[in-house]
Length: 259
Image (tube, rainbow, N blue to C red; front, side, top):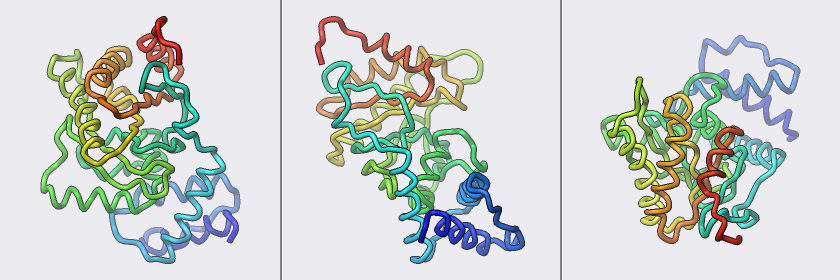
């Protein structure tokens, strides 16, 4: 099957699952098809999927990621021993684990094609990730507390695992508790990585997007916490925006270190 054939197969399967979508017409354009497929995946509840769907989905998503280009941690130069900075799409990073800035429900973003990292990670991992998160939450029996972390497989992402953590939401001024909870996100992820023998972790800018933690203050907490607690775990600070790249470069600048 071509990518187009796979995409149309997946769209049709997802529309057939829910009666309200069964009469929709699949658009002919590639961009419109990709938007529709992602939207249908985003709104799909955490349910098992058939083997035929998963086989096509997995092949499709891995090809899409390959076309975007995969970056291996082995090809990056450290800013200081064991700490890297990389700007780009976290879903294309090949490393031990990437960190997802999740919400307390932990099953991903259900807003079609939303720009948050939670949405992007769930989209390119595949529908298996939402089901895995839902099973964790069902066993746990309550919403995920802020500052803790959970581990899942990465499914169709080039990394091995995803670490899901809920950062603090800022309402007005940042409090001491907010700062401690954000630091706890980084500590919890690093501890979970150590417990599971994960050699490298890529952190997104936790809480700085939809949760409104000021970028510079969040970056300082991230760098200070990682320097103190990373142990032997290699850490990539993954940034998407130019402003965050500049902030982390300033924080990680060390004239005495030659990479």
